[in-house]
Image 1: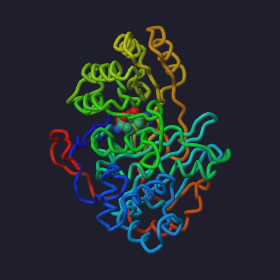
Image 2: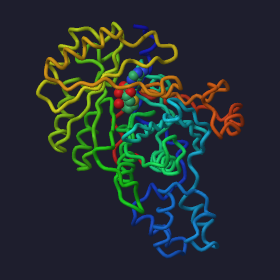
Image 3: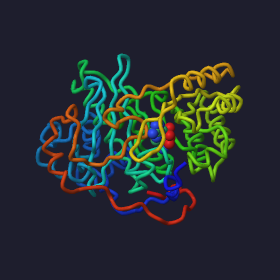
Image 4: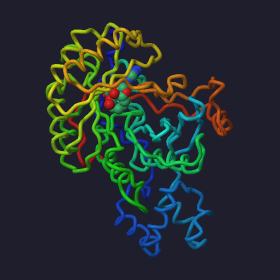
Length: 411
Ligand code: SAH
């Protein structure tokens, strides 16, 4: 393994700089209504704004149920524009669409909307960059720029829901059915804001998107205390754990957080989550050729998971720039699957949608680039050109040594 690739520090504490202004989606219903009252408006104005926001309406001029004289002030105070689309890139005949967003401080994040015959899933980012330093992941190699606010995370899902509703994705108008926290960042390292986001995704109108618990998936490297905390929230969303190795020796190198919380502790915490929610968790395992795809590791993983409420989702490694690693060859993939199934472990192989637009798992790096694939440029080409000369990544990640996980106060 290339030592240079594992040299990044683990970073838990996101810099405070760059956090955006307050937004209605950061607030509870009560707080939002109080904020409307503070602006000299009846509290129900907050409900009206919420309804517009969650339907993807951003232009105050379209909020015709709010008196014209109050619209601008209300929107400015409670619905500041936080996400500016820089460009869309599409694949699969338009049914996979990656959006690059610029945040108010210039930081860049991406989300990916994938439409299938029976569902539409958006993969959203919870942080700009990531502090978890996994050497095979493009985002992990960037380091952490900052946490996203709840409204910045929610806004990605709202935009996807609006794109579906407005018929922007081939197949006619439809509904966003699933959200996965598998974009940039480690969601459980931005715990409080991700919890606010979950409440908004599951919440009913006007203060939410009304998604079902099982159609929302939180994916984590395995921050054990945060998994336990999520277990106690009673939200019953689907949990995915990025394992990538059944043994501590290898996992220490592939998922550096393993040096803090070991394989056994991670699966124990996931088991407790499954017992509490009654829902199987997914174990994500990127199959990396000659690194973690050996038959004996399949057997080890099978023994580790047999009898647990787990389902294995194998992901043939998606290539990332500068990485010496490749996806496992097909025969090795098949052997791996066969051995897991023989051990009685439910196993699927994930499709790698969006690989050709660097939109597949682990490929999100949000680098704005002047060379955009010809399939890619949507109606936002002008904005892209404007940004090509500046507005790049936020600064380098913090180099402070890892500290304890930020708790509630991490707002
Ligand atoms: N930080 C969270 C969510 C982000 S990534 C987590 O680690 O779970 C979503 C999934 O993509 C994770 O399982 C991650 O390990 C995986 N992944 C990262 N890089 C990948 C790559 N190059 N190929 C395939 N999967 C990758």
